[in-house]
Each structure stands twice: as structure tokens, then as C-alpha cells.
Length: 206
Image (cartoon, rainbow, N blue to C red; front, side, top):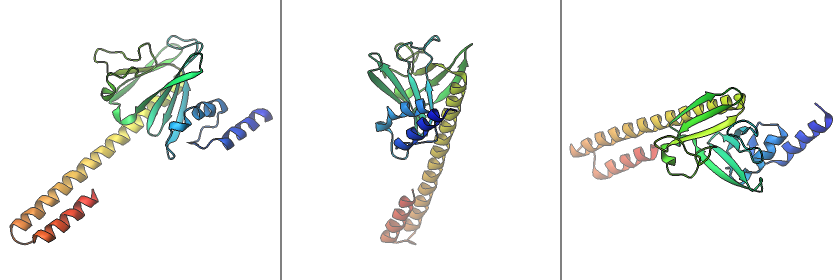
């Protein structure tokens, strides 16, 4: 690695204020373009650029995909890159995802029912495919970047699913406890004030 390239990396890492372990100068520059929409504690995990020359790509304004620990952000440039549209896809709205490998590039296909009727769900013409308009496609990605993106989405989907399951368990447990307290009040063991106080304590635990 040349001294000049190393210096460029150090300068890039010093000037950005977003959270990431990425060190590639071009990828850091891409993150800077969407920095304003990142939350202070949001971490950028991956930056991938659509191929300029492969099918599904764009020679002049290739799309860029930024995966954070909360969502996938697609930056879709137009007017020769002078302007861009941002497509935000939180992991908790994605219900399924799969990888489709091509000869030179790979494609990510996903379903996000709550994004139905959005003008774009991915990096294709009109942005939406599939009979139910719930399918999004992120295509013309390098194979390694596509595999990494697939793993990130799957991992985050699983984490969201586990968190939701735990939340449901806590809700059911609290509801059961309140039911028991209500029975104790009906039996005259607890006064109305005692019941309300204990009920409030249980609700606060949620």
C-alpha cells in the first residue's frame, strides 16, 4: 500500500463522525453522502456498489447499498449523479430474503409486505417485481458483497424475531400476573389500592 493511499485513509477516518469499522476511502465517501440520515448510535456494516457494466447495473449512475445495524439504505443517483433518491428498508419489515447467483454478479431478492405500493423496493426498473408487489430486488452486486449483505439481513431479521418473541412472552406473563392479582382482589385478599399499586408495578416492568 502506498504512503499516499495510507494517508488518504487516515484523513478519511479522521474527518467522519459516523460509526463504522469500514476503512476503504471510497466506501467512507459513500457513507458521508447519507450521513445526515444516520442516527448517532447507528453503525454502518457494509457498503456495496451496483456494477456499472453487468446486466441490471448503470454505467453512469450505479446505485449504492449501505447496510447498517438497523436497515438497508439504497442511494439511487440520477441527473448524472448530481442528485439522488434514498430508499430506506428497515430489517423489521423484511419477511424473507434469498440470494440468486449469476455468472458474474449476484442478486438479493427480498419480501417486505409493509412496503407495498412504494415506488421503489430495489435496484430494478420500476423497483418492484412479483405478482403481489411485495418483492424487492437488489441486483448487479459483486458476489462477495451480495453474500455479506445476505448474511447481515438474515442476522438482523433473526435478532428482530427473537426480540419480538421475548416481548410477547413478557406481555403474556404480566397479563397472567394481573389476572391473578384481580382474583385476589375479588376474593377480598387485596384492597383496591393494593391491587392498583401492584398492577402499576407490573405494567412498569413491561
